Length: 81
Image (cartoon, rainbow, N blue to C red; front, side, top):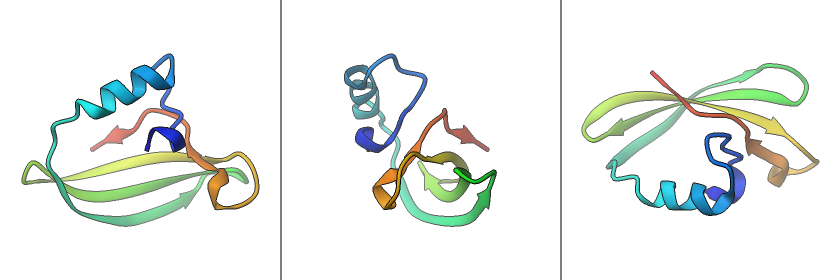
């Protein structure tokens, strides 16, 4: 996940990986519920999931940086609702 997430909350990939590895949430039953175009190269993906037994919605901003599926990357902080 670190490879494809340009998470701006962390100054480098090493710290990002350390922080992601310390996540202790129990996440189950994920489902993409919305995919919305923002502009030519950006869109937002909304995911419903069960986190620690509670329903949550998470919005992932995604930006296309090059051609092909591997060119899509998360580029900002994630929004939880």
